[in-house]
Length: 268
Image 1: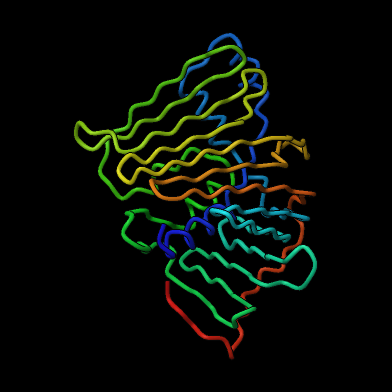
Image 2: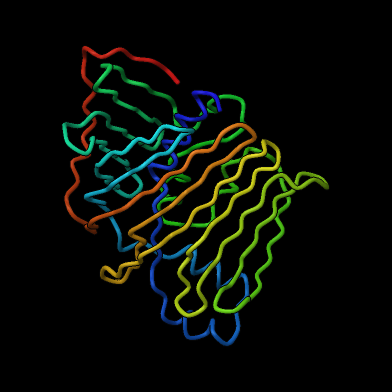
């Protein structure tokens, strides 16, 4: 994996937090019968009541080859505006801060006094993955939008099947007769919680597996307090475990972008 790809993956993973609104009407109907339209309505939940989310006491463990990195921090989101990530060692001061706005991303490396920046909708590297704020925010909301990250004309084929206590929702993406990516969601039949996601990128031989665990009800929403992820390609793998201690909805978030004047600026 090249450095630009790793940086991009860390940005995405830092934001890969799932939440899903409860929809009691769908839950009553879905046990008897489920179609793709109603399942997508659940996954693409209405979050109009959420203006801001703050994830507190976050513990992030990243395993890359034989190296294990552990950090604490917070993640704050002001809907349709800015996402702020503060990373802190287990004991110590903030070592990095990430700002994602509608059009830009800034990574402040306080240890090396360096600011990495980019237009968020530009291609980084040669892997043909497009990033924009809408996609990152939707990932945060556990919505079905991962296929929009690929700037390729496509045909989409969807399928849903029931096995035991789970629905398996599959989305295949084609260019011509060739499949280039697949998404698989594993969803509980009783409460429609999305507990598992696999994304396979056949064009680059990359795979993302995500497990959502320990759901907690806060107001009318359910949140996974633990997320485990594995990203692999033909050469390397990254394992990430994210634990969240507390969540605040519609509270105050300090999202003012403050870029130190004496730091080096490096485009990515």
